[in-house]
Image 1: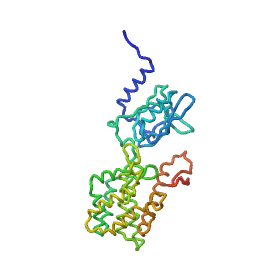
Image 2 (image 1 turned 90 degrees about the vertical axis):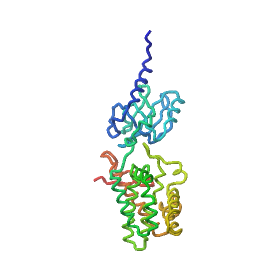
Image 3 (image 1 turned 120 degrees about the horizontal axis):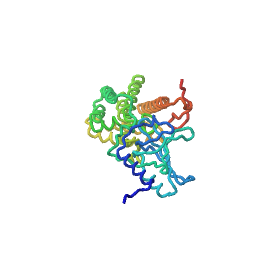
Image 4 (image 1 turned 60 degrees about the horizontal axis):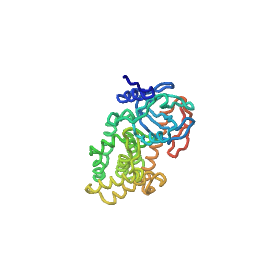
Length: 347
């Protein structure tokens, strides 16, 4: 006798088989209202379940290399099942999504509703291509790195130069350095962003040393090159940018000072006084204690790098924000590290 499965069981099975061989076919920037979606998206953030008229729902922010979009999972009355599904999803996961594109308050979002035979599940990490989910620098990474090497060659003091090259000639370190983002949200928040930011800081430092004779150019250039190397260990960036436990508890400035000091022990001719000055600049380059600085800048080179770094971050953040403006966007947007709303002229 032929057995028949209920329709509500057949559809999830069919969807599961589709998801097994699902490859990324459409990107966030191409989504339109009313469109059905069966694709993979990376989890950026999540908001805990809440109750609504028909049960329990939760929100996610998901995306790919072209942008992010809110997603809502409309669960039923089984609160425990919805909470278990929510708990099983982590930032950085890639989800196989079967849903529809809707609008909420004028903005696009993805709705996933099991009552409409939609489905949501984690993808097999082995089948994920991270380049589909992470944006990358528009500049050529190899050319930027070569330019950084050229500026490094301008360092005259042998001990400082040897310290810098102990990093830049380390293939394993440089592989990570070239791929690392500079930040999670504000500026240079893409693969290659750390190298891009570092090179810009070095160029600005080189120019500052030409203007101010009081600056020790070798010390400033060395600090500009190494001061953010701790960010190599600050973020995990497989499909999204997430802080590591070390970064949350210690911070990248302290991580950087540690790895620089560790390398410095093996550099012949590097004095303790030189290392103390370099340590001070690394630990103080955020300037203010509330911004994560272990010390306020107390040397000319430390003051210079702090303001160079801050200028670079704010300028790059403003340029990025302007590039991302849509025709329908308001003129007032967030471009400040402190979350202050500032105007952007779009003309």
